[in-house]
Image 1 (spheres, one colour):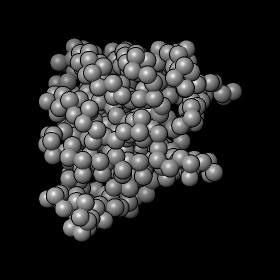
Image 2 (cartoon, one colour):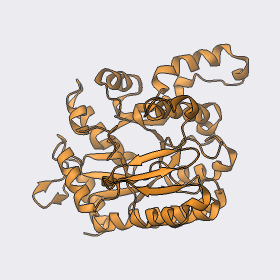
Image 3 (cartoon, helix red, strand yellow):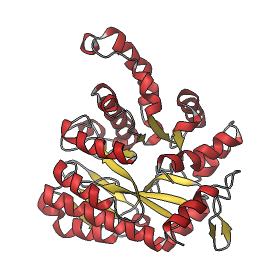
Image 4 (cartoon, helix red, strand yellow):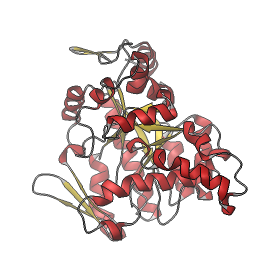
Length: 357
């Protein structure tokens, strides 16, 4: 099936897989789309293993077939499923009721590396992810990795990656090399994303406060990830990124992290803090500029988020294949007290619109 034919069939909910109907978990027959799914292509792993140590990143293999990345800033264990065969991945997707995954990196991403290695790592991921999209054209799309520590190289790779089959979004860490997402060097990248309609998907990498979370295993994930997303979001709002690029769409992982809980405090800060005296709008007026995934791990919190931002700003997320993800992501949405139309939007309709499918 050619790409144009596939997109037309996708929009109509008519794409058929052997033995199953695409989007069978949605009432409107459209595909279930997971916007938060991680993947390490083999060429990317081999490049990290061969050259990462020179830039301070070591990759070792655990006895169970998992992967361990270590540096002076991170220690991350990834399960073997993140680099397993595409066939086994699609089988796992079938069990979860997911039709399409948008493949993305996760920590350590590429911003830890020198500019040259970061550019080559980005190319290795983008080529590997695109190869998966070509091999399974009905099951995968991908968010491009970019060496944002070197903006000129990032723009060059963005132009190249945008021509690859399956590229529909861009992937950013929530901070990089001690810099934040309102860094002016990133604005030309934002401009390209806005012009072409590519959403920017965020994910924590080097979380804040690791010296405080280190004593308890996993606290940098349990606390660091949501806090880091909140700080990154504050920089996008208060740093003027969303004002400068009014059509840019940004997806926040883990149901927005701390953002929904602190947005009222941010609004009060705009009213009361002298540092924000030139900020003319409530911070909460920017909430609907973001997409939020469903990884809240609490139905009431997820419902509160939906009521706060609208069902049309929430998208399905899984965090595949990590143990902090959702075992049955579709069931999380289906059991909520929402209309069938709202559930269908969250399960795939909103993502299809953001990805321009």
